Image (cartoon, rainbow, N blue to C red):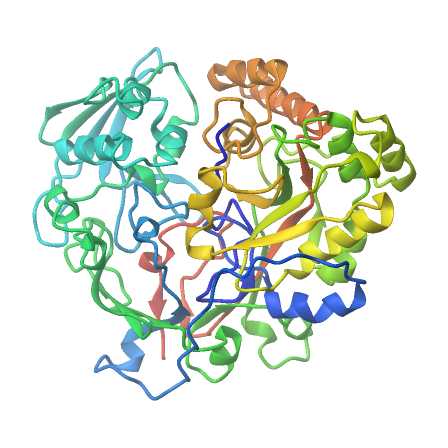
Length: 565
């Protein structure tokens, strides 16, 4: 079984740098962890066993401006850093990557239109299986070297190399002929890639797939410089990228400084500098003192109040994210569908949202979030029904709570902390099913490595945010038997066949109907416990112009400017 997660969009990840309870992968936090912890007093907590694995450095106190860069020339943010080098490599990151530094052939604009990026145009063959990309002749790396088609081939073959062991390459590049063979060590190059000349790349995929271009917005497909990435293990601290900003300074535990790339092929960004102060304190508090210009919000009730002075600086939106609990269907007791249904029907979504999240989320009964093509308002979900849940527990091959093996819930966490959300869900299972679970925390910086190595319990706290607005990015990527991201090992031949047909269906109406049918199968099989669709709340200073709160991560800073700061 492959257990695959991705950060920012695949798990409610608690980052050492910014203590938020966040939606998954590449998206913005929605609710502060501290707020959840405070509300957990409303819930009776069961006895939990915690694995102490991680300690965090004390945050730097807010201090005077520590750089020669004029304050009015910089967008200032708060953040942290990872100790795992793979988090900074576009080919191996589980997140949305650093779109300030790196770029790919295509991208999304603030309205989520697919736009040319390194490639200024492309043609698609009549059979839909051959793409010819024409790279911009003015596209350069930060050191001034021109980007060529061979650079794209090198970057993608590096991502597919067995030595790099990328966990995302099959998801985002696996449609290209020869990628699977290279990943498995059966080939030393990708058959479907060829450079017709210095600025023309031909890509052959295994079948016509309407979402293929959308996948090329993900960082696994971004272009890197061979000399740079092969210069040493810490190449990522001095990256030679192609994006709108250059990383000019990185002082661990202090700051990262990005400078506008004046030679950027799409035009120099308007904001001269971006400064990320590392571990500088509570981001919301820093926003109030003027030390950062943008922040995610955890005091939601306060800032949604129209009488709050900062209310007009609040941006809100619905994210394309779904939270869920992963059942490892390859391990007892969740190899039994009745067990999965019992745990699902013992979960009260509305109570969870009202008590733990103060109403700031939407209930999720399926995998597709509102706003995603394929969202089905008529979906028949599993209802909250404790009596039926207990009956299903008895009907399972385990015969009830007394016959269950020990159940471990694996989470990404710091020290002995337990998220309020997990505590609340565990309490519902205890109350409704008389089942006690054990929670183990894994070090956040290496959480995904452990998940991919199958070092986890039968339950995982999960979630997914769209990389691109297509239901394939949810159903196929997360639950197809052969998907690298299928962290629960779910498998259903009928479901797989439906997805495989939908991949190549060109009639949009038929294709959407297939994905809706597939979602109903997921619900009927209780493939996961779907919990919430996240809402997003951010504060943005009035002088920060051009900012758009997008449900999918894009290189937004290159569209922004500072006015009257």
